[in-house]
Each structure stands twice: as C-alpha cells, then as structure tokens.
Image (cartoon, rainbow, N blue to C red; front, top):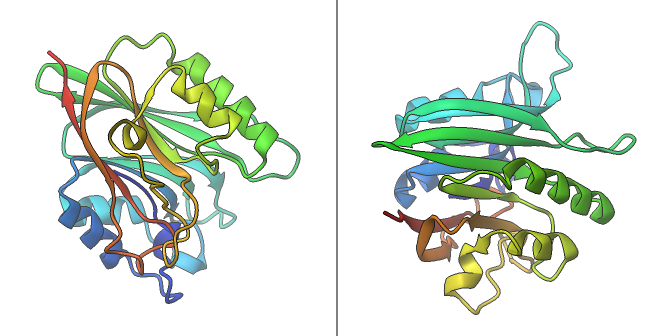
Length: 235
C-alpha cells in the first residue's frame, strides 16, 4: 500500500490516527509506504510519534525518513516518509533529494525487508510540486536504484499525472502496477471527489503484479486515497 495520510488530518479537519490504522488493518497490507507523517513534529499532531504509534497499533515494524526537521528543539523528530512492514526490516536509509530555494525538502526512504530468504527493497517518496524539479528528482532516484538486482517496490505521492515526463521516465525502468492491470483513471486525489492520479506503486521485473486497486471506501481519513497492489515474488 502507498498512502499519503496528511498527518492523520481527515476531510472533517480532525486529526485521527485511529482511522488511518483502520484503513491499513482492513486492507491486509503487509508493506505500507506512508507520506506526510509527523514524528514529534508540531502542535498540529500533538507532538506524537505517529510512525511508532501506527506500528504499535498494527503490530508492524517501521522506519522513518524525515524531510523537514522539527522547530521545537526539545523534541527530536520531523515530518516525512515512513514504511511499515510485517516482515523484518534489516536496514533503512534516508536519501535527501535535489531541492531548490525555499521549497519544502524532499527525501527518498530506502528500506530492506527480509521475506524468508529473500531481500526486498522498498522505496517510498513524496516528490516536489515543481514540475521541472520533479523530473530532476526522478533522475536522481533512478541513478540510486538502477543497479539493484533484487525485488524492488517504489511507491509514493509523486505529485505528477500519468502522462508527465517524470512518470514516463519511471516507466522506462519499472512497471506501473495500476496501469498493468487496469485501463481506468485510478484517481487518488482529492479523496472526496478524486480527479487526479498522483499516487503510484511501481515494481521491477522480479515481482509479478497480481492485482491493484484504489481503495475508495475511506475518503474521510485523509485527502488522498490509498493504492493497494497484490504482488508475488518470482522464483
């Protein structure tokens, strides 16, 4: 699953992490990439470690990659991307991405999970709103992941529609889960009346895509809808 949770802020303007946990739990997802997650970040989320809270509630392992640091120096945390996993996390890294001026910093979270004897690479990101900079960030990401010869999932909120240059760049190296099994629009944003497809799950050729869906039954929990793919490791 990939899901931009907007720090748990729902369409009713209430922060409610229990709703986010319910969405994840009812999906049955084993690996979840999250965007816009707060960890001791600010008053808006009551300085809660949202990653740890969700992981404890769902009995999952977790990793966090801050893109923005907290301004409260008594609280060590930030705001960024996370991965939850039912499988053991054996390593994770935070890769800063190219930025410009005063734009919000962006990062790429890299997580290695172990599924029995297989290592699965999971990448989660939230790309910039600036079109020209998004293409640069995608090029930067491709350089980091191009040499990986293990099963790989790359997902997140890319802030880009399917026909943009940056998404085309990704399709040269990866398969778009939604596009592989569907011909419909797959809109994910805004959740109340979706008109844009900007959230994606990509995989390399070492994973078989069984199915993919946009979960439309939880449009109150965040301003994005989650995308869920069923994948199989090729043997």
